[in-house]
Length: 208
Image 1 (cartoon, helix red, strand yellow):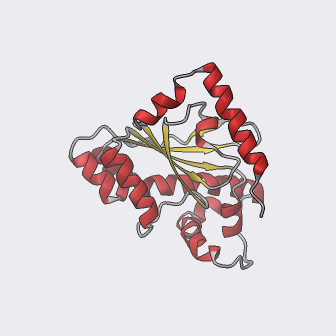
Image 2: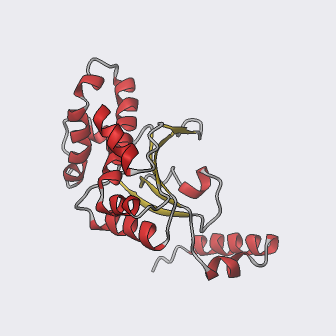
Image 3: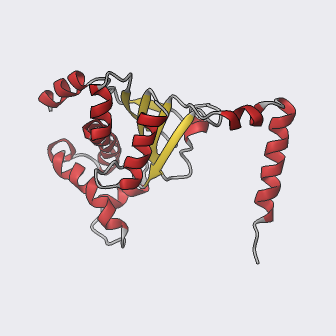
């Protein structure tokens, strides 16, 4: 039976290094979970939320799926969102996509990819809704722009959830952000979509 012994060895090495540096790290970490941030990102293993924001374990509550999509019938995502907002009382929700996203690329292709094609219909909707912006662009520019537009659409989807709407109605301090990450240089980019109230969200919708 394969037990992946090398990963347990690496875990032990990691834990021991942290305890040497800070003996109270794990006891403190185990006492309370009160992150300020919910990260909704892509499942791509090259985009680890804590590492690219240089935050320690416990500071970011994370939900990930293919192409960082927020779907109103996805009970997994909605449960994470509800727990983060209503129980953990996070102050910021970050939807973070990344350039070079395999899910976004697959949504642009005519080929069949299997079950995932059903999930990627949501990204294809983003393509349809932004056809004018994407038209006549070179393939690389179209790909990059779609990665950004998908993040912006998911920010809107987060804002439209009853969870966020009710939180704002109750006066909660809650901001929704849209970011994108570059695998080529490790830099995050703010897509300037920050929305922190129902009023701001309504103003944005009128401009769409």
